[in-house]
Image (cartoon, rainbow, N blue to C red; front, side):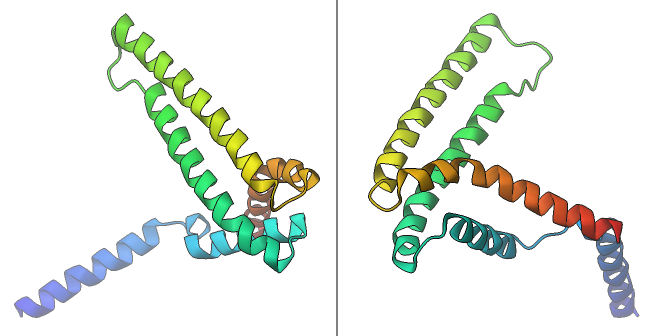
Amino acid sequence: MRKYTILVILFFIVIGTSLAQRPGDRYDREKLEAARVAFITTRLDLKPEQAERFWPIFNVFNDAREKNLKEMSELGRVKDIEISESEAKARISKKFEIQRKMILDEEKFVRDLSSVLTYNQIIQLNGLSREFARHIYQRRKGESQK
């Protein structure tokens, strides 16, 4: 009897959590990443040998960029209602330090990419992340209206 009670409880927990999630909010991270790779590769018209050299450079830069953006976001969050002036000043200084680092990282990224891509392709790359995000948003919006 105890075994059946546990199974029934587990069944309701699984059903409850699956119903609590809206279907439109779920996404497969691997599929999303594959779509991003295909989108950028297509839009930049990368040849196979270019893509082979491009993606490792891009991934290293993008991972570092995301880490820096996350750190900057955390610096902007104030957990307590008030922080001291010295803490606020330190956070702002740290934010500027991260921004300077990000500029240096981007300059290195462009130098590294210039051996793989043309400068026109590098300029196109700048807007592709936003364009991809808009593309995904519009697809999801279209699916939710069906």
